[in-house]
Amino acid sequence: MKIKYNFRGSQARLDKYLSRQFKDVSRNFVQRLILGGKIKVNGSAIKDKNYRLSDGDEIEADYQAPRPLSSPEIRLKKVYEDDYIIVIDKPAGLLVHPTPSQNRPSVAGALLAQVKGIAGVGENRFRPGIVHRLDADTSGLLVVAKNQKAFEFLKAAFQSRKVVKKYSALLHGRLSASHGFIDKPVGRRTGEGKMRAGIGRPALTEYWVK
Image (tube, rainbow, N blue to C red; front, side):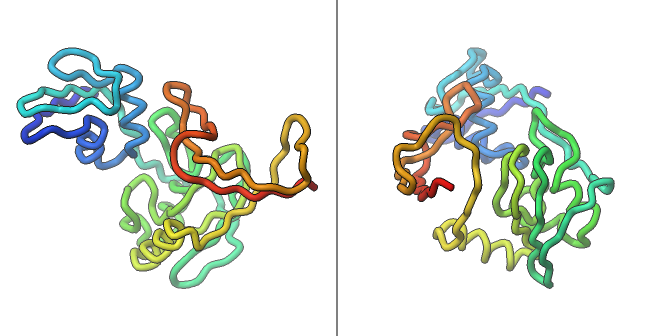
């Protein structure tokens, strides 16, 4: 799908501008489009997410947004539920929400099919009530908001680091200490789709070796 925009105004970063235009995808997705050469400005592909737009620039975007997919066949394992939240035990192999590259059955689709009124909760129709996520191959607990008030409360709790996440993981190799901290930012490797330490958002991990 190709969409064209005519930019009007003072200079703006390309990824931020397109994030405001694409209501159903994240800025991360927009940046991957840019790095993949799917965005053209004045007829030329731009692969710099920090590219600055100028008044009168013509932008052409070539992308396919995922479609919301109801998944009534997936029975969610609920470990807690009240009028405000649901806590789900997500199995490994199940997507939390659809993505442009993986539009298959997901937790989001099961929520749409099984929880009345959740479709309008949150900030994105592809993530109804979903405040945080787990990778598809990771199992664990997900907290989902059932109404907007609960969503805003949970969002603020995660942003202010009032929520502690605990994981069990298998590692390759040996750790020199049985307990320690990893205080490094974590972000996505440019063009690889993989995460690495040393770039991105601040992150603090405390670990114990079992």
